[in-house]
Length: 128
Image 1: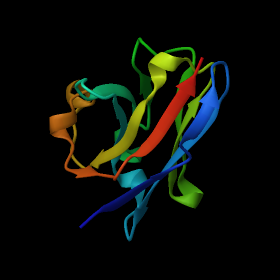
Image 2: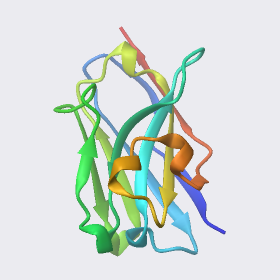
Image 3: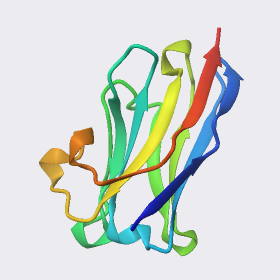
């Protein structure tokens, strides 16, 4: 089984930056498409960004709502996937989750229900 762990969340002021990390215990993340999702209280889970597996080309994607501010990347040597978040605003406040799947097709990367493995989430709170 795949065990994912997110880290890097916290409480920051608007305009600040955070970098979230996702790693897997006993698995090589480069073999998986890894997505980032977030969920605010009372809201549905929202796609944020994803990066494809190495065998699928490794391209990164960011949702339109965060494009230009957030960047997803990998450090395969460290078995890590990052979500760099810049220019944070209060609307970014949510629990952020990483998710992984070994066989996800490109058209499904933004769909949370298509990911088999999930982390516990890390809280990001942005104050105004």
